[in-house]
Length: 155
Length: 423
Length: 59
Figure 1 (spheres, rainbow over the protein chains, first blue to last red):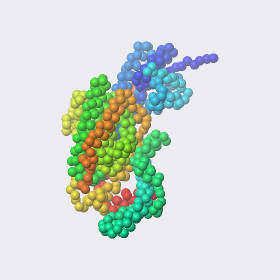
Figure 2 (tube, chains in turn cyan, orange, blue):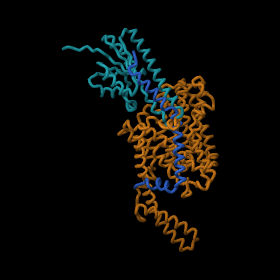
Figure 3 (tube, rainbow over the protein chains, first blue to last red):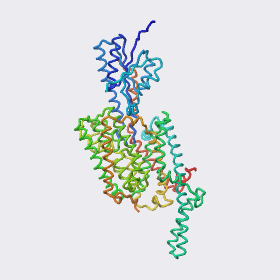
Figure 4 (cartoon, rainbow over the protein chains, first blue to last red):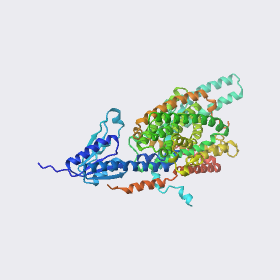
């Protein structure tokens, strides 16, 4: 039996607590397998939909503020992850997309040639399972032939 | 020309589908409401007519005054007309209509909001409709302006004045308490600021106005908006039933809702649902309340010492008022002024065949369109984002405001909060 | 390490510009609509009343 060696890895992260272990795992995988790692961050403009709330004043400042904050988060994440990757000697690229995370991650998976997608996930049970949007589960349903690895957070 | 152009959004076409959906939804629901009201009135008439006929014959036999007899005859004629509208006769029963319309308060507000929420969260709303649904919500504003014909300056001075003092105490009391507690427990200034403003006045609108100033983080904003939406929706559905159970008067309910329900649209919806007098009080106190938005922004800037976060052209009292004042409320006050002048050719909402009487027939349609937009915009997924410290702060503030608000309006009594409309 | 869809960022900023003071526009429209209704009600109160209180209810 011949195993095809995986040749590329995609990490989708928002930089939040529940993604930290997924980041560690993907760095370890990229080092062990000696393959390039692509880091994807999606700037989710979710908050912008509220700008035209009735009576809302200062809408332009609000939209600009959301844009600025999303940019700042993306920049900070890029700096942190790229420097970690460099230290570990990993070949690494950082991609930033803008839009709905589910749609954009799937678009990137289809657009690139990846063998494995790594995402972080919260531990879900009871009410938190009901409340969660559960992105990893939604992704898993729409990944086609690309494999997905959900790394559960410790919290 | 450029002014005309700036009045229309470049991509106005994208609003059409959603707007049409709201028009259709509102039209269907208003007609259902109309049918329910018609059969409810017929049901009441069917029960009242035999009683009134008996009373009339007793009065006639007893030689009562012509005025008393005329009064009963007038009532009888009204009930007969209601019965004739559905082609019924005394003794017929339409208990289902009374159950739905009166007991369960299943009126157009409830149908549009509950129906909208069900549609949005089950079958969903296609993306093409979303921009138009968003634009339908502010159609409440012309409705509010038109409602100006219900007030005179003495109402504004009395109810608005009492409301302004009440809301100012509650708004700044909540904002101060929330911001102080957040600071004490080490919550970031961004979250403390938006939660203070959000739970103090106008919910999401206040979060939008203050978040750029306090540099709130997106995650905190999502938590805060989710929490505010969750409690606003809860209050909207719970308070009218709670008010009925506690036998709160119409005007007291209007004031209570204006103190406890954060989002303006939800406040108007709850009050309109409760009754006409509740709505009149709520709209007036709300007019006073939304004028406080610029001041809550200034207050936040002062509390967190954030002057450097505000650009130079937006600093100071006048610039803040200019930038954050909801100018449409001036339209409302212009109509209040016109109504207060008692100009005979404008008439009044209850003077038949006059302009203000006709205007009074229009406002409900604007409200219906706005409520259709609000119902279809309420997404449970957004509310699920409520969480973290924002949830704790929001639930504490919402509960405290609801209880203290009720105590305050019960202490004040109905009289001071009653809108007279000059009558 | 580059931004693969940097255009999106630009688009978002443009969207922000487009809604420049949309709250003021919304408020002015509310006043204009109410003004139009007032004028129509002055011209023909009965027609407006009948349309909104009767004609629109088809059942």
